[in-house]
Image (cartoon, rainbow, N blue to C red; front, side):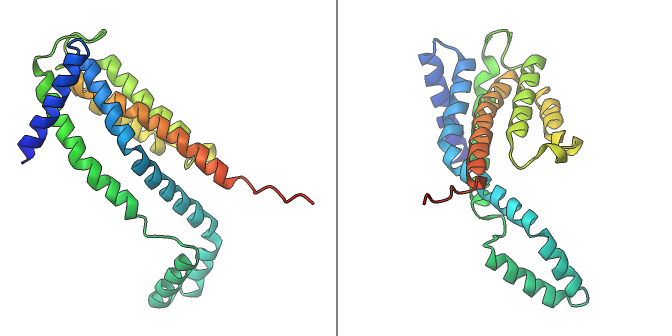
Amino acid sequence: MWSAFVDALGALLAQWAHALDGSYGAAVIVMAIVVRLALLPMTLHAAEQAWHRQHTLARLKPELARLRERHAKDPSAYASALQALYRKHHVTGGLGSGMLTAMVQAPLGAGIYAAIRHSVAGAGSFLWIGRLARPDLWLAFMVALLSGAAILLNPALPEQTRTLLHWLPVIVTLLVTWHLSAGLCLYWAGAGSVGVLQAALLRRRVHRAARPAPSPRR
């Protein structure tokens, strides 16, 4: 069943490459953008829910500290009070839509990566890339820059709290894509461009939600 799924994705990639004048590189980018755009409503909703949870927990920090102090010697009472506080402010466990999104993305992403790896094994050049089956340093840098742009647009990371730890994903992305085939990096770049779009949309939504409602006219 898994091999049939990968073969179907590979056949779809080949059809798109044929339609794009035989360019597997362009077909990989198109597939990445189409897939990420199809998942965008789900991933954007999950990201927005995560932001609201983080924002609510930050607002509740003083109350959480008082609860810890009040029930320092009674963990059971503290747990009960914490759950009551979470229910009052509609704070969820943080899994929900995020877990569903991961369950959809993980097998789909693995299948696409397997299909691309097989399809570009004998593919030729694309733009400045000599062979799609080999790594390309400049492409890896582009993917890392897209990852950095998404972090810069992330409303959950205000300027004063940005540390080296928050930029660690960019460094990891560079180190990983540096050793991947250019075909897989092209998929990562296409998906990353939609990731930047998602971060921009999320930033717009949360800023709109945080804006105070206009006072009624008299």
